[in-house]
Amino acid sequence: MSWQEKIAVQLYSVRKAMEKDLDGTLKRISEMGIRYVQLDGMRGNQTEEVARLLKHYDLKVIGMHIKHDRFFDDVDGILYEACLFDCKTIYDKYIEEEDQTLSGYKKTKRALVDLQYKLSPLGFRVGLHNPEFDFADQVDGRYVMDYLTDPENGISLYAEPDTYWISVAGMDPVEYIKRYSGRAPIIHMKDFVPGFDRMDMANNLTEIGSGTVDFRSVIEWGEQNGVEYYCIEQDQSQMDMFDSLEKSIAALKEMF
Image (tube, rainbow, N blue to C red; front, top):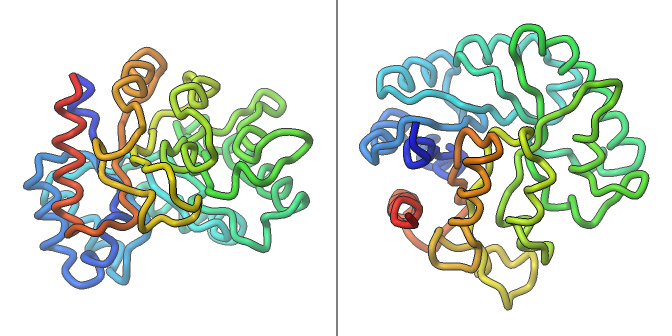
């Protein structure tokens, strides 16, 4: 499969559209030529209906973002959805604020590593979505993402690096992701505009090709280091979201 065929869309990008018109939203994504999507909740829709329409529009789920607390109290529900969507790559989407503490990070790692240990024989991959607070906090001298994905008793969690949040932290995404060779099946592709406050997403987040992230180098590295999908996640945009995604998709495809 060529790298262009590995372009995916994180459905968090179209969460508002999914709430209003699930069928029309997935139809539009399919019409863009996208075959792979990443889930981030059902957005008020029945889980079985989401699965039915994804199949109808030939959209394959390649990763699932799962709410943090479900890893502690709803593992059965996670497994049901994983089977329904035929997807065994699952990520803790965001460590809730109450667990953004030393004890919370350690509790999180124990839960995720334990789940990976139990599910890896069945082909599951458990990981963590690159959090925006990652570069502010450390555990035992390690950034949160590094701490959580450091091997423990031979068990490693998977990383989902995000080029935007790495850039917000003042780091080079190309250099930073090198630490996750073979452990980052999905990379979130988001562009960044410097010169604004680090949390000013309205101005420093932009469509791919309009900022400073070196996506060509990200892809070149990814093709040599086990990246399976390049997933566009546009948290917000000053454009219509579908137009925004189409612009980013086109920009990625034109890089080589």
